[in-house]
Image 1 (cartoon, rainbow, N blue to C red):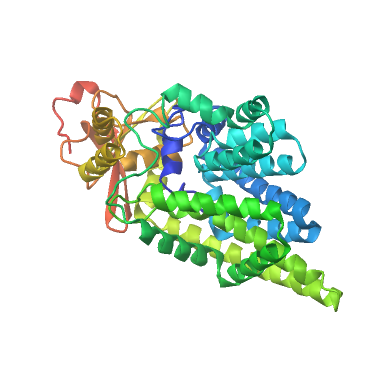
Image 2 (image 1 turned 90 degrees about the vertical axis):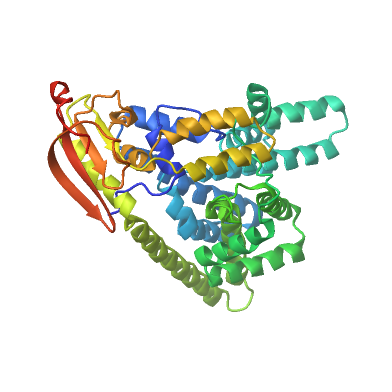
Length: 455
């Protein structure tokens, strides 16, 4: 129903599925994309893998909350997470948050079970997905250092839990490759505005009913003073403080960050909501009635969540750029022979976006010269070409944008710069979506290149 791969990072991952390291991003999610695309190039299989990981997040949350507060709380929390619009919407395309949350929850479950080595492995793998997991490792190490009596045991804890960040830092001699930045230290960023933006997004995606339940659950945690719950909530709060203070501004100058950064608060809301519903279902008086009410509430919230997820996917599918990419990719999949390539002439990455990137690296104290070199490479790329490559059921090298390539077909976007395409043969089909259009041509034979125009 929704064949298009929505998003930005998800498109870049599929379009560059022959590359492990993408800018500053940690490698494990991309390794999953590379493996899936190597086995089956059709992006539907990569999406199925990440959807399975998203389902695993809901199951892992259920297991952790079950261990903390009983089966009723665990089952309710898992059901709420499975149908949460934010978690569902971003789990069906290859984003990093799903693998990170799954591994964090597996690590938490192992810690609760007293298996430190298994917990260290899971948390270390989570730290190879997103930097937010590094905060979890830091908090675990603070707790271990406070309890361990000797430096030897403290050093062992650093190795068991901190192995992944230590290896990554040793590899790059810092937090990320030269010319990139992890912490957005731009003094001009409007940080306080981010808090209101993220709170608004959490309300939009979660809904007032779930947030009310989560508030009740939070009151229960404070009243019971369960240190295990408090430790998890402290991690979420610390991570969000880091996001507000040093998260990547998106877009640069907009004073905001990506809405995806509310994944952890959304997951916490599901956990706390499950706790609140379990408390309702286990009341001494009218227990059977309370259980029925709790089940009805979970069912209603899940149904509403699925309805809103469908609306989000429908809205994404209406995006003209995505519609054109899906149409071009479907046509090319049918017409291209084995090993043949598709040329795409489309608008390049805006110069202002590249300048903003270089400025951010400079203000973060990074390697400005290397950032400019990366910027020059970005200037030769096209977001539309990457969208097409992400939709194709073929290797990413099928799509080419350079003049020295010899494609069999050429897709020309009508807003592409003049002279940015190859010599063209007959037009085969024209697709339109909103204000944009693209025409797919047969590429002119090499012998005719000097006789044909470029547009």
